[in-house]
Amino acid sequence: MIEVRNLTKSYSNGEKAVDNISFTVGEGEILGFLGPNGAGKSTTMNILTGYISSTDGSAVIGGVDVLEEPIVAKRKIGYLPEQPPLYPDMTVDEYLRFIHELKKSKLPKNTHLNEICELVKVNDVRGRLIRNLSKGYRQRVGLAGALVGNPPILILDEPTVGLDPKQIIEIRTLIKQLGRNHTVILSSHILPEVQAVCDKIVIINEGKIVADGDLEGLRSRFKTETDEELSLEQIFIKLIYGEGII
Ligand code: ADP
Ligand code: MG
Image 1 (cartoon, rainbow, N blue to C red):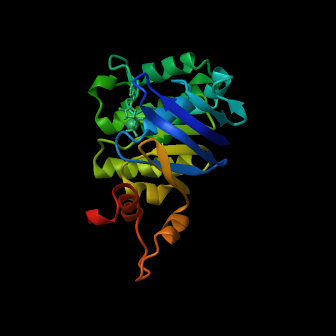
Image 2 (image 1 turned 45 degrees about the horizontal axis):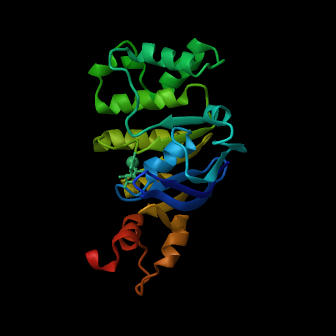
């Protein structure tokens, strides 16, 4: 469904934000995309969604090359960027109608938006100005926007950052639910969350992939003498910071 091949992004200062990374995501899979701050997660997601170009390599989304046919590829993707582009002076309902227009969705507007609002549970705030919403509700509205047009692929950049534990659980439940009929790439700092939600994990550091596979595969790479099962968090710390830190 998603094929990233030898993707590289260099900025004008010569620094490589993403350095020759390759991975694939199968249809219906939820991929956890992990890495410390500055690792290159948002850069990769911005390339996959056609917002910035790559310096080298390719990204193919549902058989369509993002660089060659950006508009066709974008239609297959619902993107929730790190800072969702919400308009604070619009109500939730106005915003979603606006996104429906913007995406030129052919789905019946009222029914489609009702379904989305039901799913992400924003019905009780549909008439409210976005500026007056809590962070948790704003994140749901951003997610609702990503779902407009029913794209089969969702790319979610740190969807739970800044949320409280209850809101995190709610968004996590929602992502799990969405994973039943979408292919999802999810970047996150919250490792237990990724462990709970994702089928597959890619860990990136300084622009390079340092691990790729399912949790069992990652665990077998780090078998301990006591046969203790490492958590994703322990594996992540070993990979990124080495053995000495804890
Ligand atoms: P992450 O999302 O994993 O925290 P990013 O993809 O945002 O990481 O950033 C990866 C690297 O690229 C960082 O070192 C960042 O400073 C650098 N970077 C991002 N955008 C630019 C830019 N426009 N110009 C130069 N360097 C950039
Ligand atoms: Mg980021």
